[in-house]
Length: 255
Ligand SMILES: [Zn+2]
Ligand SMILES: [Zn+2]
Image (cartoon, rainbow, N blue to C red; front, side):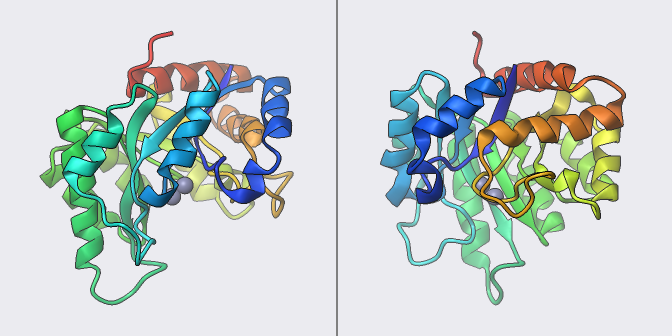
């Protein structure tokens, strides 16, 4: 019923307890998850999760915070994205919070991902932090509407949400939306059309209330759905079903 659109099951804190995590997903009716790649060095581990389990998928990309790693090229991304279980390019984007100084390389890396995505027609998973204007500008310049995509772990403003939706992007909400100080984020969830929303954990980070501070895992995505359900005046199950449908729509899965 629920789909976790963004998690990092290859990270050691989760990989070590994978059978338990998959079991707890099943119990919580979180039937599927997308395992997101953050550097090419890890891609084979991410892909092997997707190859081993029918209900897991993979992406290929290099996170904007990673330095001194293999820099992706359009050709390399396209080659790795050929696999049928690789359904997205990313995570990619801009992060002006973690890194400072001349970040031309970060913007260039972002463009490389967008170019690959528009050639292979697989959607982009976009990470943006303190870089909203540049993110929107580059998404528009690189014609993101040709491949589609999602603003993952959404923490931006209502104005940003409006502009991203106009570019055809989906918005994915994480456990942050359950935090006490996240009232403005809940406003965005209330505003966003139900057919353009995804839910995610970004596990192992950012566990939702009531697990805040603990190691996050896909089964907790239900608590993200509950918060959105409250804002929309519908049930958590309806949010689960609709966001699962949106996930299929965006990533071209027709099950
Ligand atoms: Zn991210
Ligand atoms: Zn992530």
